[in-house]
Length: 529
Image 1 (cartoon, rainbow, N blue to C red):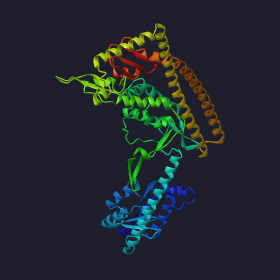
Image 2: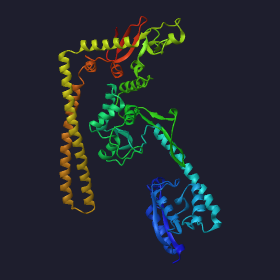
Image 3: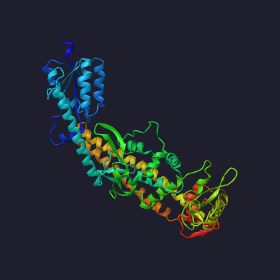
Image 4: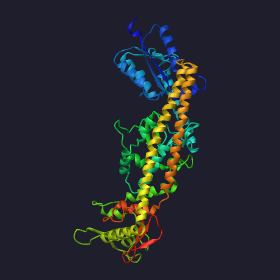
């Protein structure tokens, strides 16, 4: 046998081909491609050195595992001929046709044969037809891509969820994979994140709290608990802790309101896998597509809190304590920082922005010194705490802490039961597969399946009882006065902090004489100071 008879087979099947196969045409299947090419090789006295296969890979790209391995072996001189069903199986990208068939392969002394379409680089007479076919194949991909994008956008406008994986807190409906349903455990974690943030915890701190509680990060939860083959391109193998960015994304995702927002990213073109972020006016948003995890008021408060927290700060962080919540009592505009006119021009307090920009004909200065303002606000907070919290109230709050510990214990038990249910269901499914593979008898299958079914039923009953107890404890825990809870830590504080202000105060208005009025978040009346 001559050396030039060393041949390899290249097989490829794309998702679009699979969609076609579902309609009854299996002519392009990997198995049938292999049979066709093997038969051709034997009839023409080629020795098959290897077979390279790419399943569910587009012909537009050359970053296919099988294709890349084949090209590596080509450069190592391990074969002389590549046989594919057609040129389009090899590639649908005209640029690649020119690079590989008309440049790299000739330089490597490799011949390409397309069995069905007659493409053969040993025949110089059909080069033009190969190039024309290359253009036709690329045009086909371009049209197909446009049609697919159009169909996807139509589905998005209809509110159908098209993501390959679900947002944390949701799973796909088994009866409709384009519809999201709540995953109880993860949704509860999402609610914890929102509650913690509104209590004044920063995003990094929330991440540390969740990590310390042993709550798995979304990537690990999807893989190890839900059993989903999920990969996050930004993930490190050692990542086990909740990050600032993960918490930030959850706090800003409208999916938790029951809305679907899609088309945020698009491919640069049908020939490029790079994702480009789309402007907001191109996003496709549909409200009320699934059950909400967070109510609209809580989501609004979180967005407002984030807006306030990101206000400008000075190098010492001092001016940030009141940023975003300090206003003129008369013109209602924000107060701005005020500096010494002489010396080092240090920051000393605030004055009305209208006065500073438009003069005293429009509004007066409403000047207030920073240190005096801090003392006044701290005094007001401590007075409110003393008026509200009696010894009985504090005892009641301790009871609430006890309820929280019960809930945490029940949740841990529930997590264990849910995992056991999944394990038993997996064993039951495996038993059925063993029966189908004739590894066990019908009687053995019925016996094993019956035991698993009984175990699953009992586990589900225990889990439901725990969920009912958690709901009952939650109901008791939510009955306490939220105002009292917010002030419990501020009876004896000596220093006013940004977190304290954000947790308790909606806005502060400065009167013309420098006195202030405070609007607390959990009481509407303005309190004069």
